Length: 182
Ligand code: AMP
Image 1: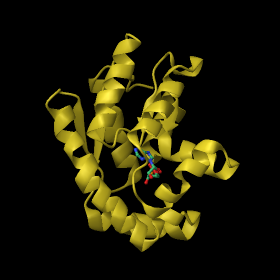
Image 2 (image 1 turned 135 degrees about the vertical axis):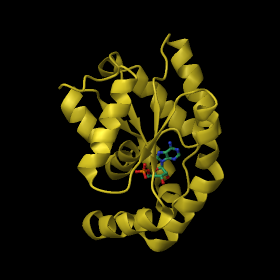
Image 3 (image 1 turned 90 degrees about the vertical axis):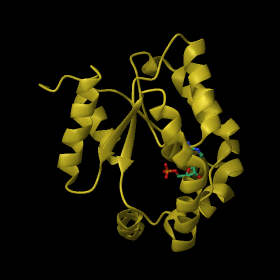
Image 4 (image 1 turned 90 degrees about the horizontal axis):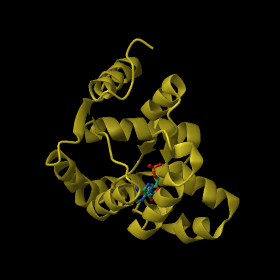
């Protein structure tokens, strides 16, 4: 989320964060929000059907025609397959998948700090344990899926935020997606 917003600010590519969208739906009390609140608070993943619906709606918005950064997507193999279909149906393609490589202990430390600032229900220790388990069970296999398709870019993501931002920009520039001189 942090790195996506840097890229958005610098290059104007819109950021689509499914987590932010779902949290907004919960806050606004929409039907979608009511459907996902419990699952989100527990730290489990929302259904692939719901996520793919959100992705489809976002891809079809005029703001997305020039490309988008998905943040927090995809998190399961069915989402990867669904995303591929949605893009192919629209004559579009995925340019790169950025994997931010951070050890669990560091992730837990970052979440603890964020909990003091944002107070997200899914940042409490029990929900964090569930989220790490969901990651191992459902999201980790997605890495190999994209690696075998040549789309995966691994970003070492421990250290100063600015250094990580430089790695992200270099990775995107290598794919011809941004201009490093900007
Ligand atoms: P995040 O802000 O990305 O950590 O997402 C917060 C929560 O929203 C997750 O723990 C899930 O419950 C839900 N969520 C967000 N994106 C996805 C996704 N791609 N697949 C399934 N659940 C998601």
